[in-house]
Image (cartoon, rainbow, N blue to C red):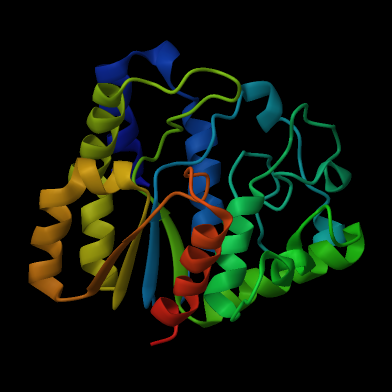
Length: 251
């Protein structure tokens, strides 16, 4: 908590109070991440960040009795580890534009399952599987990731993107990710010593290139860079990228 708050305060003083989310939201994202953290982290999926969550959205909460996950956080955030993200039916209040992140659910599914087509991911997709079964499948998948030592970690503790707004300039992204790396993220990776580090997206690799290579020399883990799931690629290439996750996570 101390390092998380220190990192947040540094970002706040650098970017300005009105430019970032409330700390309570950052802390909730952190709580969700810790809930699904494996006892032994073998593979880290290093992504950019969660999506901006407003204070009013954060007031919505999940029906914990429905999920039956003791100790699971219940506040809403736009973060894939929060089961309410993309699933208004388990929230006490509907969240506008609560689309979730099906692309990341496909990544999660591909880490644990060999897939031959996008149709193989349908057990966890809203357009393919009815609600009750889908939520059950998502919980089973998250538990499987945890059991296999696969953990999602973001390079930035604050949201880098606000829904329906323009992407921030590269200089802001660079500053946020470097502050988070220097004050928190590198220490987490040094402590956990994952066997595999999968960097999701060319932006994270571009910002942290030298630092990732330095860490790689220290621990000799397998470092792989894969495109963002929303990258402009042909469907065949997207499938190829998804298929690569299983091999990387199950060496």
